[in-house]
Amino acid sequence: MRDQWREGADAALTCGTVSAKDIRRAAETLRSGGLVAFPTETVYGLGADASNRDAVARIFEVKGRPTGHPLIVHVASAEHLDRWAREIPDAAWHVAERCWPGPLTLILKRARGVPSLVTGGQDTIGLRVPGHPVAHALLTEFGGGVAAPSANRFGRISPTTAAHVREDLGAAVDLVLDGGACPLGVESTILDLSGDRPRLLRPGSITPQELAKTLGQQCESPGSGAPRAPGGLASHYAPRTPLRLVTASRLERVAAGEIAAEPRVAIMSTHGPAVTPTSGSRWLKMPSDPPGYARALYARLRELDSGEYRLILVEVPPEGGPWMAVHDRLRRASAVRTEDDPADTDCAP
Image (cartoon, rainbow, N blue to C red; front, side, top):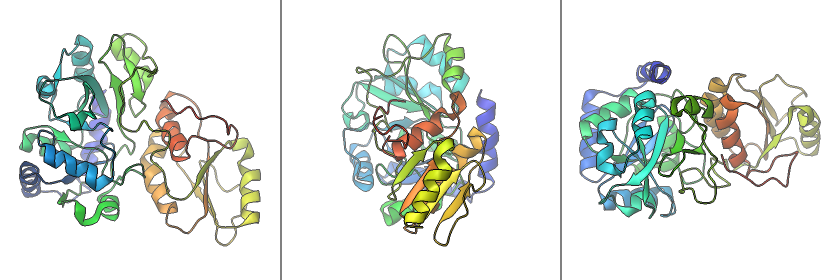
């Protein structure tokens, strides 16, 4: 399973400008309590030394992130799990062997001594071994755990390029490693193994079907007793411009009506224009395959969130496991209210 993540991540490294000297400088910045933005195969992370409470506190300050929201700790390999987690089940080692390095975060019981600020005050911790070569080089050089949420303002569109990081956070970040565009484009799958049964807390590039095959059992939905996890709010990954989801059967009619009322409307669809865009409106064609759509999603949303449009209409993508992560991000970006089901407010992945 890991090979598919490595192929895209290795290609991404050639698009960036990161040198061995940059990696050493970034590791030293982390050791001195600074913040480093770095690419992963999913999105760019805003990293701090996970064992340094003051450095971790800066993450929350810079992002405007509530302190009750846990962070994911990134490590260089599964050999570091015992430093951050306790009572690690056999299933965790098995999944780690199959999926790491890669876009999977494991929720485990936290080890004693782990700062509570990292875990949002919970007795669990999120851990991941990213597959991007820049992230791996940084973690290897640093030698410890790096707490890193997405490198953007809390609740807004995640960054998939270094330019996105600079646009959002500016000089508040001490160093930005430019590793090119992130090859996957949506955040990691989050799998909770802290309880009796595996639970999927956030969908990502690794699908529930792949996890079930690896675990030998189906993952349950989060439920009321699940740990809090990153990206679990009803409204998240959201542009400032209102975003509305519309089914394919209604898109043409809704788009025509909105454009007629006031033309500053942008439409995202996997199909070509169904209505003739007028001056001030735009029809943006998205990739029709799940990996391509996910890779383009955040960059396209940022492009349309420039203030030029009053509304973004998004055609609801196809159903199915490979589309689950895209559905999740779009539902949260639209405040989980679709054109066809305005009463639906359940956002659990």
